[in-house]
Image (cartoon, rainbow, N blue to C red; front, side, top):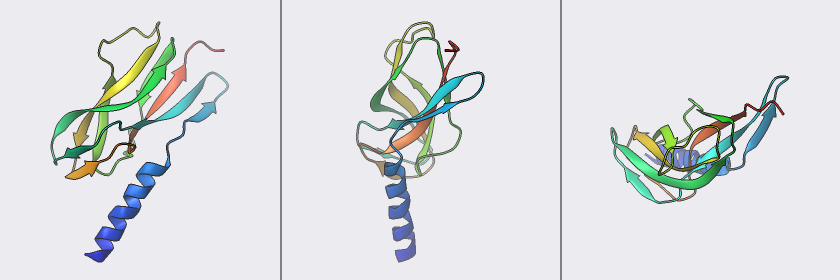
Length: 125
């Protein structure tokens, strides 16, 4: 039982660590990995789907948004992102909330990383 408690604490500490965006570039496009960070404390139950408010992420015009399929939170996965009113890719957008699918019971705290967005600049600059 002690081993499980220590393991859970270490996972929770890792979830909180990777909070900074990470830039990348190829010969044809550039982009950025952006962590999705919870802006509220939430208790989740296994099998529950819920909307969680997140720290706002600005999406520049002409930017493709992808969700990393790699799980970053031990309690579930971000399956969609958005804002109050959906907007077209050609204008600036802002991620304000996520749709989260819980895979186990737990407590998500404000500041926890829920997932990662991959932003790809399609302007070719």
